[in-house]
View 1 (tube, one colour):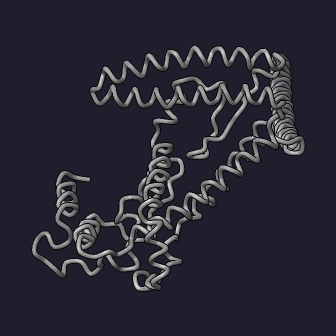
View 2 (cartoon, rainbow, N blue to C red):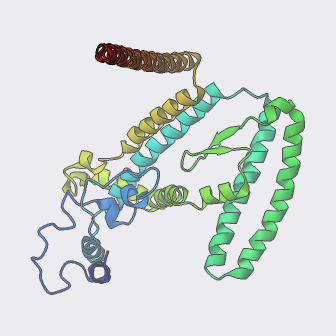
Length: 350
């Protein structure tokens, strides 16, 4: 985006569609069904999760900063109940995310070695301390970049204390399991963004996760939903009680387009992960099939090399045979020539 486009977007955001005195400049109005009501309140998941691993793609509804400014100006004099729309949208979206989290936990329970209650409690203690360290480290880095050095240093001292507690918890966990099992990565699912976190992840990796755009985006969506449920929840009941719901949105189903898109992308990621795991050593059947395919490829390669060697030997024999034939023909011609010269000399002596 050029500097001119940025300035135009800022003016649209501040003054709306009629900033140049053109009341008919936009054919789309903020109250049209094709305008994203969640975007008008600044909480559309498509915008928040843009350019992350869970990018939902472009929102099927219209996003325009000028329309947001129009809505903010109009909402001062009239209640459009768009916060109720945004709350319902985020509720559907977060419900999909929670289903993904439950599914990921179920997969871990099926694939990871089951731990006793005591060992599981010690592993969870290590995970919780590691997550707290990662969160505080990400916050300390953000404060340092913002110039708040004293607050950042205070957090770093708290992180040192947490690291000591984590080392003690890791020692207790290590002593509670066999040495051969300790090196195995024990995973848990992030309750906010459904990502996998390992018990052996270092502080930098955890800080990158908790300070990353994906985790912060999901955190912002969840916090916005909690805020909307407090403010718009009672008004939703009032809206339904008065029977005025359809006055503001005739296309309620289309409001949540893209709500299950995250599930679809999650299934695609799971399939891709399963394919990678199969190549790296998945189930016995997958390994057997992969081994058979590799053996067939090696066999075909050996056959090609064998045919190539036979062909080279055959060509070598043919070349040697042709060379011997040429040499034999030359020798015969030389003998005939010597015989003719000898016969000529004998005749001349007579």
